Length: 358
Image 1 (tube, rainbow, N blue to C red):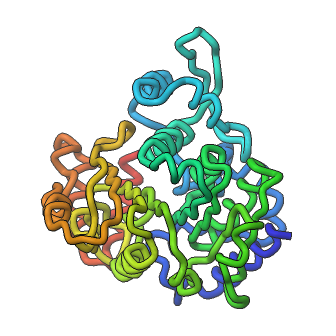
Image 2 (image 1 turned 90 degrees about the vertical axis):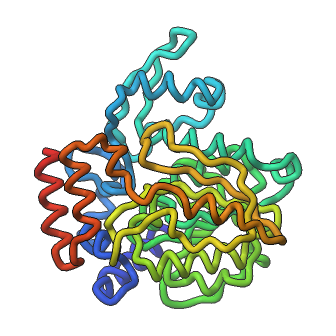
């Protein structure tokens, strides 16, 4: 039933995609298949035998080997937690074998290791009270649902709201239903029905919310808000809309995990994390590059009730481009030039980069 609602949302969204708030990046990459085809392909939505449905929502390769990635993650996360949170079956992803420190061979994927890293960092930043009591989590742009599932395992009393375009919402609905089959999951319709989180949260583990319904949660209160690698693929007005929601609904003492590229040209104009519209009511918990990608920044901040201009100064002084981080490689040069290209030429440059990748 929930998958049917998610399919309805996707079909409605696709008919209106050119008028939607989706960036050119998502208008270009949205899968365009009929309902029956999508239903058949969900069971293998991460398989790379053909172009996966999770393409652009998943990570399949790294400059590091899988073993190097695993060993690097083990420096920050215990192997018991990695084992507990690992999930590399649903959607038939291209998993690879690695050897643990105890000599056991296990199967994993690049993206799963990334999500374990995120989940561990977020969990460790929560207070003891937040870990033990019911908390409400908002994830903006939830990929295929992998991080939401891991956080639910670590925080079983939590309620998780995932806001995303229906393209991703369909995969989240399928994945979460498979990963946590006993969890109560509600998929909200794209065009009707009121949402009352306060009334429903005692009985519901996951809410899948289409991105045109954010006004319905504008009076909710959250303890944790997450955006991992999706603000960088939005238009400026969408980023501003979400920051207004974050800064209105995150409770004092609540955490905001923001993981995005220093800059990326996937919206109406290049996005720079240093220009995200933070206000000054934040205190810094941690700031670092991601272990998997040194041009991606992880900012973990706690909501405050008092002004803190030092935080804002810190964010504003982050690098404006990752050109030098690319070590002057040809692809880095092309992407840097794309940042100053008129929007109508962006696709041309995108095709250049893709050809170079191949």
